[in-house]
Image (cartoon, rainbow, N blue to C red; front, side, top):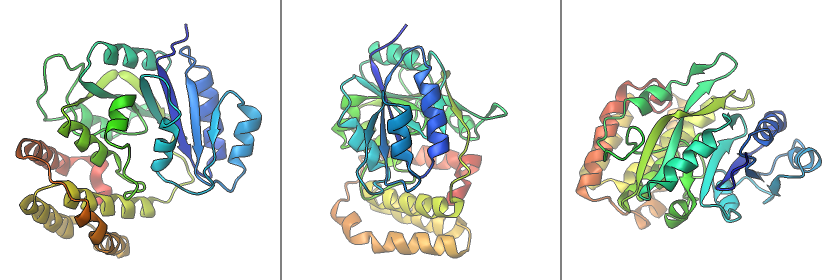
Length: 298
């Protein structure tokens, strides 16, 4: 049976083959969700292929690489109460979107539910799953799973109005760990985020990726998030920790240089979180030190 409560949003760039596979699998879902794709300026004829092979998909072509802001552009077109984010190399398990909507329907202060991620073709759990499952954050009894301090845009269903209320993903961060800032602003508004292992997303990592650039962006955005939202003393301490632990290589140097270059706009927009929320951020920071999924930031 179809389910009209959730729209799936996908961003893509120069991954035509992976995207077409994802769209084929999304089209086969029993929920039959509307799908919106933002093509971030692909040069491999991705948009033409989507228009030809998947006319049921709403295709947005801004003509340039918007990064994560491509999701914001798509969410402007969403008319359903919930939006499921999905990457061009991930796809949702049949029934998961329905269950996510059921959970959100009955928990009005729950902003987002993040799914368990399995890596294809082997089906083993993604390393980040352990971090989600073992989250140290306390939460109310009505949560459907462990309370989270952030979410994964490739595997999360969000309440559309909640996502819009924080302005979506910040354009300054562009891409790479952009979820942490949006999640923190949701938590500041009183929303809750949860991991729900009964939800499932499949991930077949694209071979068209630059892991070094990903590490640069991840480290840069970690610094920017720290300076934007954390009080001065924790921000200085965290910056020092990253300086000590990040790999001593050219990629880290680029990340710190880019972060420093962005200081003027970061300081203009700086809004430190209140003390109780900072305590939650610190708790997560300590827990993530042993996470295999966080090695790219040192």
